[in-house]
Image (cartoon, rainbow, N blue to C red; front, side, top):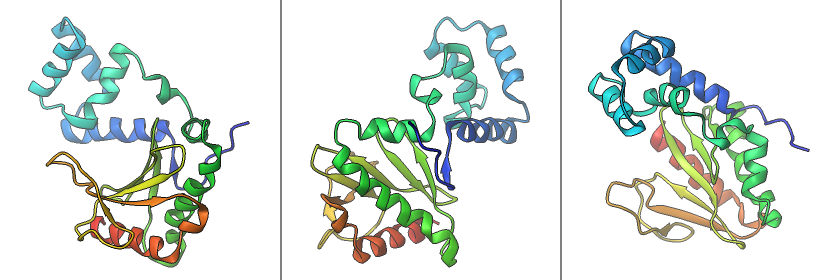
Length: 199
């Protein structure tokens, strides 16, 4: 049975509400208004609809609620946070406690004055966010390890390993965890530095 998400873990409905709010703030019009406008323009495909929205100033996350209403919601969007997390570790349950420990670290900051980290569940990873942007990504990269990819401008060394990425990818460092014993005070300190660098 799926467990209720912990406080601080955002559901997809909260994300949808945030994106709809972003659309309204950026354009002055809500999702139903843009739906009517796109349908009136009559784009022939999903790509054409996205292009039309972009030409009319609707870009990035603000496009999603309109596009999903037009073309359907992704399957994973309809799952709650607990289901998504369970799905990530269904074939590697021994790694789930590692992810839980990292999530608990990030959520634990709210009570100590550090700031409020938000956890957002995706289909294949967990996103850790400051109020401004994503600072870390927790991913079960194999059957034997969980990686924390970090937006952190520091040299590789010690627990911090360099990752080969695209030139425009800001997540160039990772920490690899194989057991819960690897979730140490040093890992907590690295996560906190990444949080503060992106707050």
